[in-house]
Length: 106
Image (tube, rainbow, N blue to C red; front, side, top):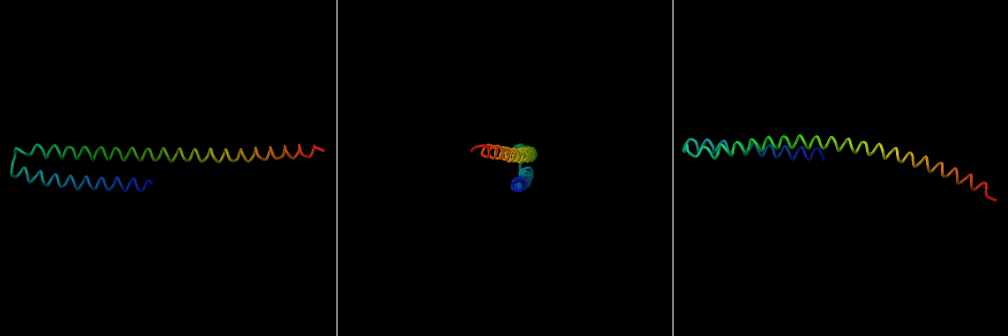
C-alpha cells in the first residue's frame, strides 16, 4: 500500500513538472510576442508552483498517517496476542475446575 501511494505521488509530481515546463514554454512564447499577455501565464506558473507545494505537503501528511497506522496496527496486534494468551489461560483454568468438579460427582 505504501509503495502504491508513493508511486502515485511520484507520478503526480512528474505530471506537475511536465505541466510546469509546458507553462514555461508557453509563457516564453507569449512574452516574446505580446508583453501585455504575460500576466496570465505568470499566474498559471504561480498556481502550478502552489499545487506542487500542496502536493509535497499532502505526501508528507500521508506518510505520517501511514506511520501512525502501522504503529496502531502493531499495538492492536500486541493486544490481540495478549488477549489470546489470557483466553488460553482462562480456558485452562476453567477446564481444570470442570475436571475437579466432575471427579467429585458420584
